Length: 279
Ligand code: HH2
Image (cartoon, rainbow, N blue to C red):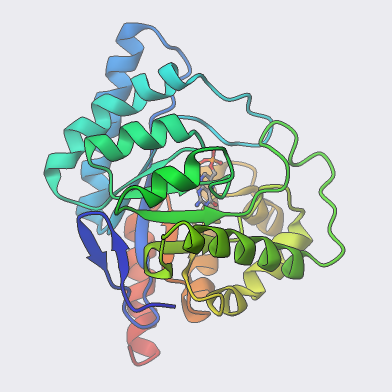
């Protein structure tokens, strides 16, 4: 992978065995009253500040849940959630990512000054590739089988690593043809997005093979069902220790970015590991 990730206003360089930490900031309220929305924006801004203090290198803002079974929201609803938070955070001068699969949200986010577009749909929607190409922002190209509403129904692959690799290679080729160089891109096998536990484990073990595609690799397993299945823990916030074990493994296998909820704990664990590995 290229040494440095070109992402909007920033050039981001992971250290050996110590990937960049992308902290997750959800802006997804359950109630959409004006009051609720305002509270959600200020809570998200406060959470962003906490994650930065804890050592996040990048903040990833999401205005639409992509959890299995979720239905999705309209462009206007998603933007109403994201816009106040994005506009407040851009002047902080920290690398900002928006987690969206909608090209219209991508366009608006780029206009406001976002640095990274994180698309769980791999820039497949009409206009998504072009939006990335017309900007200088970084892109995260993720693999998803199907769509969030149905993806976990009964995911099937003949060879999950081969198929996800072929998909990501195809997306990179298309994006390069549009003028988006590998130095601007991360690939992500998409843990839990149309995958069983066995699929997720095989993909994690193939982290180094994904690096060989020439872009960096982003790994997002924090608090996911995969960790719950391996530990028997139902409650996502309690999956922290298992999540850290996965982040440490990803780091050793050459991941450039880990997308996590528990920034402080992940940062501490990665720092100790990097020293022990001689980084
Ligand atoms: N996972 C989720 C959302 N966005 N983006 C990337 N690149 N990789 C991922 O693995 C990924 C992602 C899962 O989101 P969800 O379960 O809805 O919750 P949260 O955003 O809190 O992780």
